[in-house]
Amino acid sequence: MNKKLIFSAILVCFLVFNFVLIGCENNKPKEITITGIGEAPFGIRISVASYENNGENIIAEGDGDVTNGSVTVPLAKNGNRWTGIGEYQIKLTIHTLNSATSYYYTDGKTFVELGVEEPQYAGNDEQKFRRDRNNLPKIKIAETKTTVSFDKFTKW
Image 1: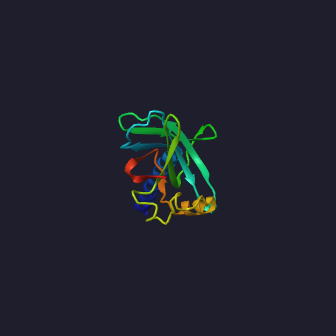
Image 2 (image 1 turned 90 degrees about the vertical axis):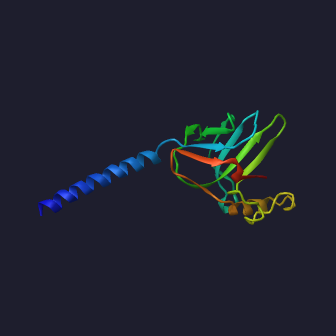
């Protein structure tokens, strides 16, 4: 009986310790690193979004500069570091001197493969565009740092 009680106490301590560690990781500020980027002399904005219900809900975002082919961006919402977890769509906005170009995380697939009609074929139908974005794959954000290769994004 004493062995079972001791074993149970050890098991409870082990579980509590692991829950504390997992909980601490989930409550830390998150950042995203994009690797394999060429040049972006005017910076990049990374947006973590949910496109469900035909809307664009920016969950968190941040700006950064490319260094040695990658950018690491701390994510924030309403001026505070973002600590959320979940699965989200990711949008990159690469700024140039006179414009900005959007890229969406597609896991390396084309928009057609994902059932997303590209803007030049959608006839400027904003509702269709919003509806189609629901088909974009999501990235799981749970760890403090999430890293994604630029070749998994497709230019919009």
